[in-house]
Length: 122
Image (tube, rainbow, N blue to C red; front, side, top):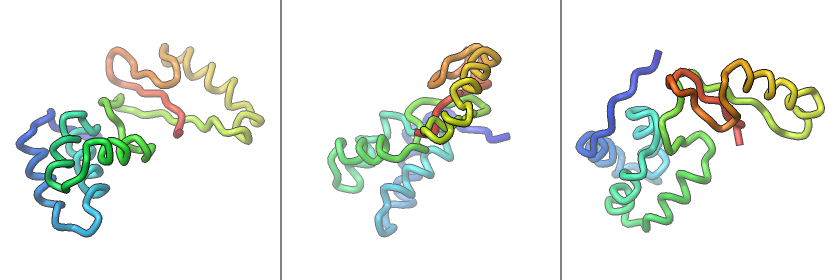
């Protein structure tokens, strides 16, 4: 089981500083932030932008472009279900409905107890 640390600007600064010297450091920093906290908090975007001399929009664009970056904490167990046409032709819509019913949440949501997140892989 993965255990994430609570958000800490000080810890985020350490992570950013530890990766800032890499070539193309934005992705390694974002991955390390998500590994540490379980998601990429909005508060870290200006921190990364400042250290890397990028605009906030550029950092935000990277976070939102890559599908595996989460902008809010996910459930302890993340269920991703393919939504492509080929998957739909094989019954993905029916499977999604059954999963939503069983989990008690709609696709794109996290259960109230934080145990499950149900999402398309984007």
